[in-house]
Image 1 (tube, rainbow, N blue to C red):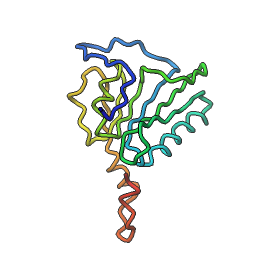
Image 2 (tube, helix red, strand yellow):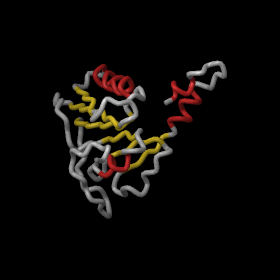
Image 3 (cartoon, helix red, strand yellow):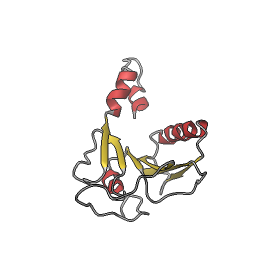
Image 4 (spheres, rainbow, N blue to C red):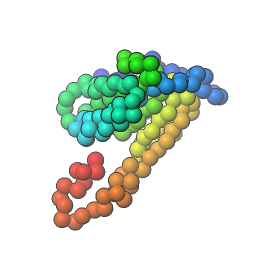
Length: 158
């Protein structure tokens, strides 16, 4: 059994420009992470930020297992019309789990945005989505430089 969440249709890779219509004021974000990595807290910060801006939104954590280290996904829906139900056509995918990233990207519609860790290579998976690799590890190390006496330093950066 694949460790990925396969609830959406897989879209074939197409040559040329994306065929999807732009979505205005209706956004679906899916964050794929590893269970136990602190992602639930980070996801709730994003959800609360949207809510604090007055945007009607909802969030749902989806995890096939509650075992630390297994994949988990967080779905966020933000809509000016107040829609809070889950959308199958994710607009933005955040890939933090190298195990499931390629399959998560294959499930997207053409023209979707993918934000991923820079150590996850997704260049050959699709050519009709926009990839934004981010050096999260370097950013965290720059914001919180190593402190030799802190034995739990690495745990804070995962």
